Amino acid sequence: MLFGNELPRRVVRVARIAGLLFLLAACAATSAVKKGDEARNEFAELPEGAFAYIRINVKPARALLDSFLTRYGLGTKTVKTFFDRTDTAVAALYPPSPASPLEDVKRRFLMVADGKNYPAALSSFSLFFNPAWQKARSVTGGKYWHSQKNRLSLFMRKNKARISDADPFFNENRAEAPESFRFFSAGAQVAAWITNTDFLDKTLARMDIPVTIPALALFISAYRYEEDWQAVFRLETPGPAQARGLVSVLNLVRNSLSEGYGDRIRSPGLAAFARFLLAEPPYVDGSALILKSPVIPEAALAGLIASFRI
Image (tube, rainbow, N blue to C red; front, side, top):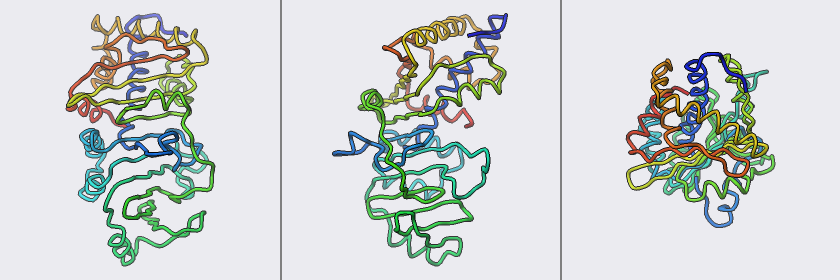
């Protein structure tokens, strides 16, 4: 790994990396815990091939979810009512297609929510008289509601809802989380599995940061302790040597932040995230780098999430 000649400059650059990692956790506030057999494959109702998979237990994570929704203008009465009825949810996220970013048939997200007393019949009745919504046929043969204007598709039953910007059903193979993710995220109220970490290097390259992240996958878990939260990050690497190398770099950043170099980071939110991530020393677990945040109040974590623009 190569850095610039000045310590403050390389501290700023590497601290940005830490901020990017936690930014992924902020995105994680849109996801679900399954029961029975699906507990062994919590993403079984989602297709394989997504960029990221997220799950959330809505009730204990509601304050974080509401903060996220409000930050991005999604905190409407309708959306809040929907989550009032939702117990758990899982979501698959897809990056835009560079060849045709506005192509409607390209799926950008798919969420499956489990809850109670969804107004399925009332919603269908209302959408029937709304010219912006039409019935569409799924690849599986079933029917769902779709709005070309809103780029949104909806399938709802009393205890389950499927929401996407394309067909809410799929004919691909079902997604299956790695065993290491299932072990790592057990008991977490919010968890995310980032399947493709190439975006880290590409993002850093656009920022003129000459750093390569030897990552195979990124796991994020968030745990609630009464009114406090703790986030844990697991960056899977090809081997222990790569994990140890990342630990050395982040320890340099951590020591430099404690000496006041974080004040040189232009974004106050990014500096706060960097300090939050590196409050505890990073360590190696086999071939993975582990970052563990301090336990902080729920309001503080919600504020950190709201301070970033995704």
